[in-house]
Image (cartoon, rainbow, N blue to C red; front, side, top):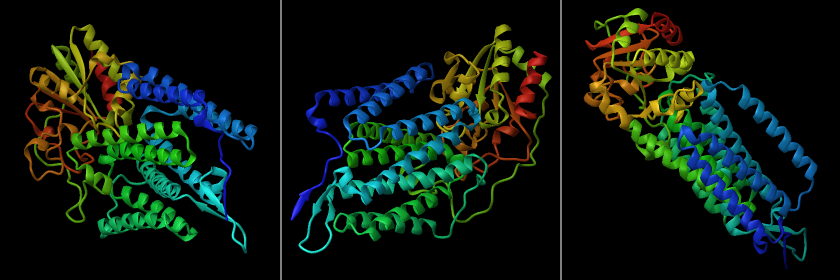
Length: 484
């Protein structure tokens, strides 16, 4: 004997106003992505995103049977207050780890929703109650809902555990060097295959053992996929986890029957995947190897390269000020070293001084400079650097040959000429900024003893037209401003 379980929502499809509200929310999310594509429109994009989310939440609360509305409102208030305080206090240099932390929360939320739906499927309207002649009633989860549950929980768990590792690496709680486990590729492929098999099995048998096995293995593979990835590849990791969080939300949207979640999750998932592909091209990585985890690393070989004993030229703040003050055009190349030293405000002041002397100043941004996509753009925007002065690699690379001074501040691998000439280099084939073509290259670095995240020495240091400025980036720029 079969009995249909209670639906969690009212007849939403029959109410055109609900569909219209979700449609408006979806349009707001699309406009938010459009706005976030440029620093000049990013604030407007954020406002569209907030408006869309407010519409989606309000519509869901109005159209669904809520057990305790005061508790939900209180939870929203507490969560919103925490997010507001964090957003106000977080430094721009810590933005990558904040993004990773938020991704982990999205993944965990998807897992929690999946577990709740599995433990009480009738409350979610995804099960049919079977009443046997003898014994207690049994809720039989619909086959399509089992697929959604299995995929949503798996992707959410991978997103959560992977984002935790990314956060620990970005925050300095774990070393940035890859942790290479013996036979990791075989282990990862075996666990991924097991998850796929278990999800398929779950569609035929809703046994708790299968469900919890999917959840446990997914948490484990999230750790194993991100642990072998080094600090140099973190920009791709952040965009990849962003995509995962979107697909997890979309899968849970199907489970809940919520159109807004499906639209939002699909937008985030697809845009994150596209961004990951763009980042892979910018780093000369294989997109498939990104998905597999541990890309850009090998099981053997020697440790990171050390700085060469070749001759190099050292300069001072006064030298740099004189060269840039006499130049017609200066191109500034910021990197993660600028973020660590929090030198963006001093850099803006230096650029303003140069402009007062009649020098043209531009900023060249590599797609993977920093620890997440757009990290350098965000830092420069914080220092109120004019958007018109900031150029991407493909738009400014041709100008270095006609530039008097290239001022590199904390950018290493993205300026290494070996990427174009040394086929044995791990960064060979990665598009880099052609700073070596400038008349003079001024390179700020703490010391000659270290190398970039890729573990290779930079050929640029030893070029005849390069002058090394060894100091903390912020202090050096401030000294240059004084000299100007």
